[in-house]
Structures are given as structure tokens and as C-alpha cells.
Length: 212
Image 1 (tube, rainbow, N blue to C red):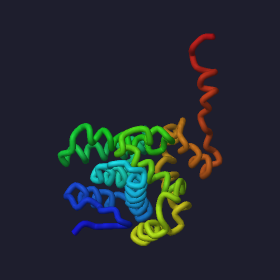
Image 2 (image 1 turned 135 degrees about the vertical axis):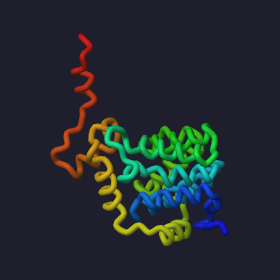
Image 3 (image 1 turned 90 degrees about the horizontal axis):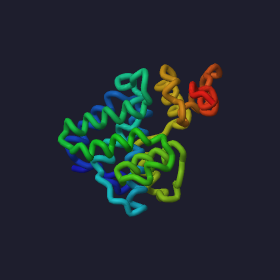
């Protein structure tokens, strides 16, 4: 029987069940519950905005979007968003989804920390950012009713979430600080590590090897 949370039906497919098992095995409670909420918030907002979304793809996008922060999937030399995007693409192709579908989810995860851009792409890309912005930043909460909010949080609680997600971000990026250049992720490293020195975009331009 399909699982229904706040009016959103979680697709009852083998692909979804295996995605859930994979992320449940790789992530702690904070990241797992966050990722499920991202799917639910994104689906609710997409519905409120009249977007037609493939919920199976939206589910994988939501579940895998922070997978690159986990020890099992984190690399040392690329952005954590790309780690999750690559894992999702591989997973979808192995489960019979098309290259086009896999590419949409890849983009959704790779761009989920890039403000505004995903909202101008396909619904399967936008839905992940809508969910992330809701759960992490609290944006546009008025698009979700009090009852919907209560049902989602009852199913996937948010105990001390603001602090816990910041610690998860830091733990997942501390050993690859250079990958945070040009993103909001360097704010996290600067918050936790007073010795962290951000790369300066202006200085890079001024000091690059091109002659004047």
C-alpha cells in the first residue's frame, strides 16, 4: 500500500524502495529525515505552483541530494553536490530510467545550492531546490499549510535541525575546502573554522597570469 504523507503519495515502486534503503544505510537520522522532507516539501510546493513532476525522479533527487556528505559517497576533490549527483545518475540508469531522466536528477542535485537557476529549469530540477529552500532556509513557508507542515514533521522530525544540519555540512566539506569556492558552502567552513581562508574572486582575477 502506498505511503501518503500530507497528501503526497510516495511512489510505491521497487526503484523508490531501493533508493530509500540505499540512503537509509548511508545517512544518519538527520540527513535521512532531511532528505525525505526535501522530497515532501518540494512535491507540496510543486503542486501548489501547478508544476507537473515525475514523483519517482523527485524522490531520488530529494533522497540523494546530500548523499555526497556521507562517508560512503564523499570524495576528496570535488563538490559534495557532484558526489550525490553522480550517485543518483548511476542509480537511475541501473534501474532502467532514461539518460534524459538521469540527467534531470543530476542537474537537480548538482545545482541545489545554486540560488534561482534551478527554478528556471525542468520541474524535476526545480522540485529539489524548492524542498531544500523550505527545509534549510524556511523560504515561502506560506505555500504549505499548518496541517501539511505538522504531518511532515510528525513523520520526519526536526530535533535541533538547524545546528545538526550545519554540523553535517561542515563534516562533509572540512576535508575538501577548495571545493567550496564560489558557493555558499564556504560560509559554513568559515563559521566552524576560524583559520579557514576563503579564496577571493577579485584577487584571483587581479593576480592571474595574464599580462596587463
